[in-house]
Length: 279
Image (cartoon, rainbow, N blue to C red):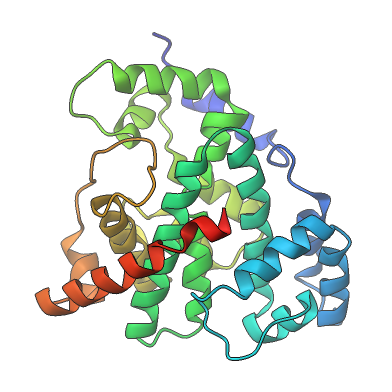
């Protein structure tokens, strides 16, 4: 069994560039963030040049999870209603879905969408500003796995072999043992490379260690709790069946008592029934 050198892998991250098949539209969007003169129409027109991608973004924007009273009919409209960062995140999510499906990772997408739904419900309860961002953070929280198990198949295959060899270690633990990195750290690198805001970046990077978040503390706590709840409810599969330890600090921050937890599990489970519509 090979033990990979973390320095070598970090060098590979630096040379990573785009995810496989990630459209150039995402890179163009990233470059536009700093410009105060960019209009919603310009952003919409860039995304709409990729008709398949635009259709998926609109499908997610019109999903019942957001619950807008009127239909969002254009990407430019979605930018106005949801905000630039959310639409950019949905563009990344739609791209990642293609990669996951091509790689036979439908269960990871199902898990990610389950976390998105649950995080959005919890954000609405806590009256978080821009709860739509929590939906996107949930969708993207495991994006590092696309690199680890698709882009770096040689690394991913050995991690999966070591995990199957036995023991009570989670896939996350095995990733760190063999590589010195985890899918969360790789996801954090991608979030930086794509210039995602801290409210998306920290939940991706710290969803296994929410107390490390410095700015998006509540958002990270929400994604952490949502991830564990969805694992417990067996919505999709993130790669293993081990439920990671729950951070008490994150749990306290989200503030679910027994009855509220039961109510939110029921709500989330009801929403999970529609997940296949978005696959």
